Every structure is written in structure tokens, then in C-alpha cells.
Image (cartoon, rainbow, N blue to C red; front, top):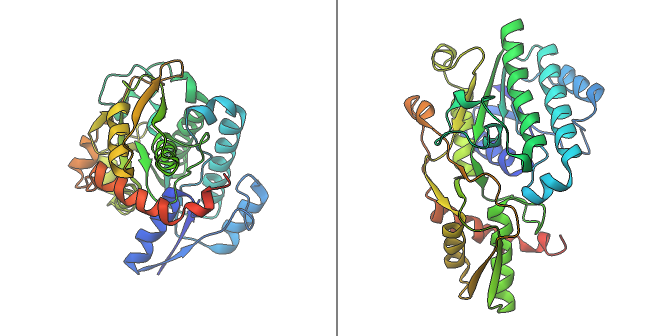
Length: 320
């Protein structure tokens, strides 16, 4: 049985990958909590890889957050993400790990890139200012994988997910992404019988959303794809693959859907004084679709499942 290390197994994406791998039943999943292994500590990470002798690595560990968090903590976003990916990728190489999957983000693409965003749009324009530090770190991770492949013949792959949501998301009212932040806001409005929910921005930006279980399935699919087929559909200097649904909606449409899901009957108010971020973010997923994979979970279906999970686990978020 292969020993597979999932870095970030307590996060939304990492936990979904663990569920996917355990459901297969043909591998041993290796995990470590932050208390057991600090991925910012290079010596500890290298020792872990020397001792554990893993066969594959899913690098899902990252410092993540929405517009507010990215604007408030830019130094932490660039530093911590750079350090984690550098430590894990280099230590995996030094320990002889041949296969690694790096999880990036759609924010790697320029702010005004043609839509839908193709993989070859990388480094063709200026990044969105509100999440530039995070995007720079993720771009560095892609290039790190490409460089180890070129210099050492490793098989380190990268997948670029669109906006993700699902169980085990971060539902902090300020430091989370748009879906968990709004879901919590709507839920609390229902509980308080509020007449209005305020939403950041104009409501006009368009976003694409992918359920985390679909993301995990795509990650396992890409990791285990035949190497010749993978290389035939990527390039040495363009080795990442987009993962998404290929369908987007406005933030207003998302808010209206969340109102239905949570049972909120009041008014929606859009605060145009708050930043909108990138006007539109839609992934071109034709490459992955041609390789035989596409998303299965529809947005409202996924939101209902996520809300049910949030309600069942809301005690952990009450003090956040």
C-alpha cells in the first residue's frame, strides 16, 4: 500500500482529500497536526520526510482568507505560504518522493485577464491588488514544482481550483471567503429575525464556485493520471491544470441563493463602499474536461449540504 501524506488535513480541502483517499481503501494516509509538525520549520519538515518514507504528497496546507484577511495580513499571507510550500516541496524531493500535487488558487491569474481564464494566462498581466501577496506565493509554488521537474525529473503537479466551499470551511465573520462569510451572516440574521443583510460590494462581480468534494475528487484524479498523458496535456513551463465548474454567477445571485437556502426573508443591502475585487473570475476547464474529469455538484445542492453541516457544527463557530 502506498503511504500518502496530506499536508493540511484539518483544512477544508485537505480533509476532503483524506475522505477521498480513505474511501478508496488502497493506501495508508499519513497526517500531522500543526502541533505535531510545524510546516514553517524547515528542519522539522525535513526530519518528517526522512522518517516517514511517504510515496505521494498532497500539499493542501495554506494560509487562506477573503478580501478583508488578505488586505489586513499581507505579510503573513506571502511569508507563511512561501515557507510552507518551499519546505514541503524541497523536503519531499530530498527524501526521494517522486509524486506531489500542489494546490494553488485561481487568484494567480491577472486581474483583467480574458474570461474564462486559461492556464496560459499566467504571468501575462497585473494581479488583483487585494490578494496579490497570496497570489505571488501560489505562483512561486507552481514554479517551484516546475523547476524540480526540470532539474531533477520529479513528477510534481499543480492544480488551480476556483473559489471553493463546503464542510470544514472557515466561517469567521471577517477572515473567511465569500460563501462561508455570507452563510454565517444569513444564518445569524434568521436567528435574530433581522430585516436586512448587508453584503460587501456592489453585487455585480461574477464568481465561480466549486464544492470541496469535487475539488478533492479532481485532485486524486490528476495525481493518479498516467504521467505520459499528463505531460502531453501540459508543458514544462506551464504544468498546472485549472479545476472548476465552468459556470459562474454574480455575488447578488449567490446572496439570493443563500437567502433561499438559509430561509432568510428580509432585504439584501449592498455596500458599494466596500471593495469588489476582480470583476469576474471564471476558469477555463476545457483541459481537465478533455482529460476525463468534470464537476458533479450543482451550486444550490452544494450550498444546502454545506449549510446543513454548518448548522450541525455551529457551536465551534459561536465564539469566533
